[in-house]
Amino acid sequence: MSNSNRLRIAVQKSGRLSDDSIALLKAIGIKLNIRDRLLIAHSTNQPIDLLRVRDDDIPGLVMDGVVDLGFIGENELEEKMLERKAAGKPFEYEVLRRLDYGGCRLSIAVPNEMDYDGIQSLEGKKVATTYPYLLERYFKEQGINAKAVMLQGSVEVAPRAGVADAICDLVSTGATLEANGLVEKDVIFRSKAVLIKRADGELSDEKETLVNRLMPRVDGVLLAKE
Ligand code: ATP
Ligand code: ZN
Image (cartoon, rainbow, N blue to C red; front, side):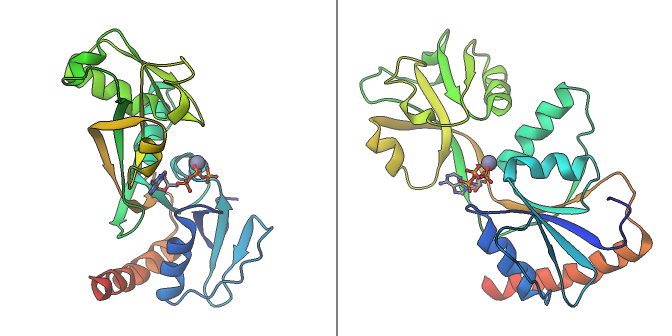
């Protein structure tokens, strides 16, 4: 699969990063024929194939060299990097460009009624999150002994359900937090979407040439939007 002559690019199939990522590819002149149910989409005017997957899978696909490029949020990328590093798997990648969409922050939020005066208030507590590696790194940096409890979904209801004392989740407006009686306290990571490339030096000369030809167009699109 990775030996195909066509450049393989992973994009989120459906979610917050999908439309902007596809729009960017189109804006740099890549014609795509996307059929909703299909995992693969072929470009009709460039030797490029899109692999449409869950965003969680994209860092690993790039780091394992299954695809050549990927569009991914830095939050997910950094979390997967730490997870793979801990598991002894390849965790290298190269950031080609930081993009202008997918902006969000990973923040610690606590129940309204909790007495909170700084991160030390979480000493000995449990914090629910989908990003345990980022959160535990933050605890370590801050010298706090607290536990990250991994939840794939419904993180914001964990305190009310008695599963955790606080949460660490992605925030863009704060409306979801407020609706669940939570207040944002500490931002632990600021994220945007990035375009990444496999860093194992395995791209063929043809693919390198193609990537080098596409990047100035990406810069042109980003500049035009500023
Ligand atoms: P998938 O089905 O692909 O796993 P998902 O539910 O994990 O989708 P989305 O909610 O589509 O993912 O979010 C994808 C990425 O969008 C996030 O990892 C983050 O980088 C970015 N993002 C931007 N704003 C927000 C937000 N308010 N909440 C969550 N993610 C956001
Ligand atoms: Zn996901």
